[in-house]
Image 1 (spheres, rainbow, N blue to C red):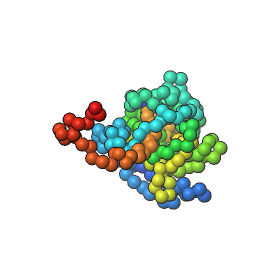
Image 2: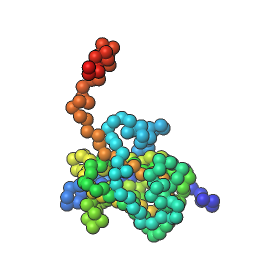
Image 3: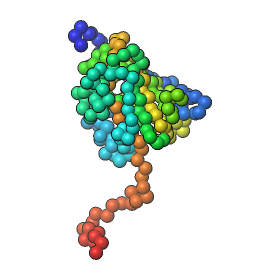
Image 4: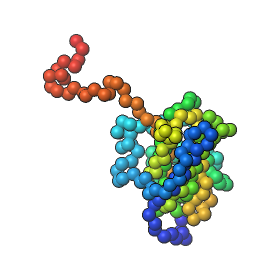
Length: 215
């Protein structure tokens, strides 16, 4: 990374929402501060709230290219020190395919401009569909010097989680006009539905604990 220089700026992300004919998208464009996860509130802590669950292991993952030794396994190893590195022309593609139509609420991606500099993604497109032939863009982001987890909601026009067979993450450009990219982690989340049992308070009094075992 030697020889790179850059000016420190506050990390921001531009999110573009689009409405196609099937009404999967929101017809607004807005600038917003990057949704940086507060210190310590990483995705595993979000999962512990019981409202979302990571389902990336249920999908088949593929890449448009990779440098030998820096493939899909580096995206899914829960290690922020490792990364996938592309090895080909832009856009660089990450394909996530489910065997059944799956409800997806959010993507989590980890990027680190301080370490990766010109390898850091800048413009990202998220597309969904049944297969490669009918993918449609539902989110477009422009990140500025991101450092940490970026959460990308995948919601329809009435803010419900989408249902899809496939997600494609397209890395359109990098910072400092870099060619190849580094992506350190990607998480895929589905909402956790609260069961009727979960709505009742748990009985933890001493009297109850004495009779909780079926005799």
